[in-house]
Length: 341
Image (tube, rainbow, N blue to C red; front, side):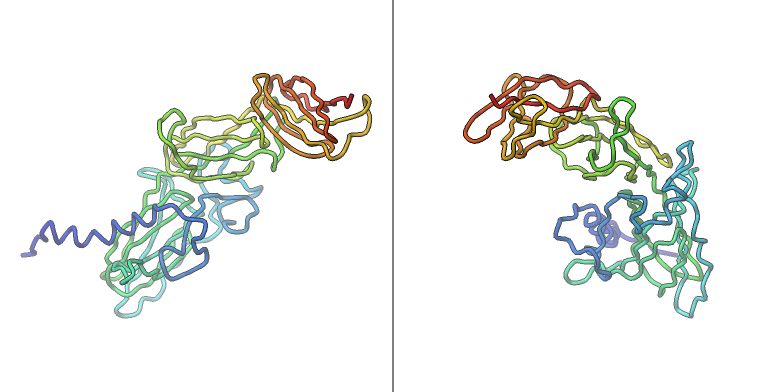
């Protein structure tokens, strides 16, 4: 008759798994090592899948599309599942696969598999035994206990496994979805490089000071996140054209978000006469009617993107100050001339 392990013994077995989960979910600092292959701390994930990046080419089909038009995340299977390899005596084949959830399709690209020793080192790290980026790898390992981590963008899952017998099959459920972003002014798409997005977990209306889970996301890039509610902060330019939007990401779906900004690009000029040459070495301040400073810059003709509304431009040149009130209309880019007189 098999004995039932005590609660204390069970907790003792699970503690390494809990420690691994905590370390996996910990924020990655700017100074974290990026390229190591031996310890858990050496393998952070950005969660960002960018067309043409060269790092996750198996995720994208022609044209960098992550999903077909209906928005179902069925990745193109550019890499056939690994055939079952020869298994030497004393070793076990571990067949891994992932899907978007119960009764959901399989994930066929963009996965990173890592197998760690179940026992921590004296320093508290978990030794990386094997790593693979195939959709459905079959790994041959010595029999024993391990911890398997799978990452799909920012969606991750950790599971302890015990290898005994011939072949062990483990299927992971990752309820994740993709988020693709772009910005527009009216019907005009904002060019890449002029707009970026920050993604936060939860709703913008929830209390608390939170850090973004993805920063400076460019137009057309796809962020893979666990299913749930998020909000996006869209920054058009570097002044005051900022839009916040709540979104819902569904498992197995690619959600396209278009953020519409009410703004325009304005070029400031200090001139001696209308239509004249802009004066160099001019210091600029753009203020609201209430006197709040929106943007400061130095140059002959600085370009600033402003939200629709009324403003006051102040120019300082050679110890003199000039100013002008002006109005920004959505989609109407243009020059604002301040007369040096």
